[in-house]
Image 1 (cartoon, rainbow, N blue to C red):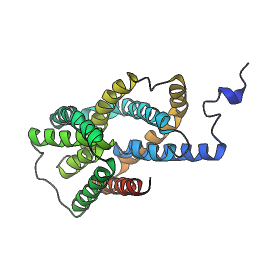
Image 2 (image 1 turned 135 degrees about the vertical axis):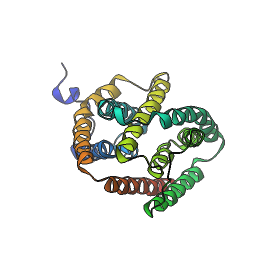
Image 3 (image 1 turned 180 degrees about the vertical axis):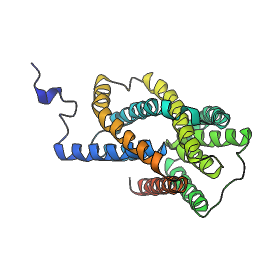
Image 4 (image 1 turned 90 degrees about the vertical axis):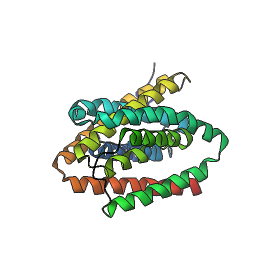
Length: 256
């Protein structure tokens, strides 16, 4: 007969590291609920300190999709479908190109390059740069291609899309809603690809279910904060998250 300790999905993780992971995951969920992005990078960075990456990535992906499913009904009416579809099409085109780069080129220079570009672009936006009209569909498609290339090559495809919406005249609600929908679409495609590789074991699914209360609780808190926030505050917070994630990418490229 199995004891309670063996039935607990994290029985092999010491209490202190597990508490750290839980706190980090909860914080990442609050960021996701508030801004619509940032969960994966924050969660993976913390969870890989305790669990093997091969387990962490599928868990985080399942949590990402769960987060999007939870948030989509509340943001559906704010989604900008005119820009979203070209982004998704471009992402589908760019991802195979990125995978080719992954096979052919070293990952470290790519990580450093995109981190520096994101920091520069975010700084420009912080200083007040903004487009007067929504970018054309061809521009959105091009951004989607670049995001797909980055996602396929170094696993970081979000920043170009986040910067795309922040530089446009789209309001905070439209930006957040469109990001939620975008990541739901791209994560779903990745989920299907990973499923064919047998990465979703029973243990991964059970651990994901055990972490769902933290995810939902964080999203609820983050979403409530978003409702009460001013558009300028949302924009600044999102840029700070982008810059922080980019700096983390630089540290990871040089020291990990």
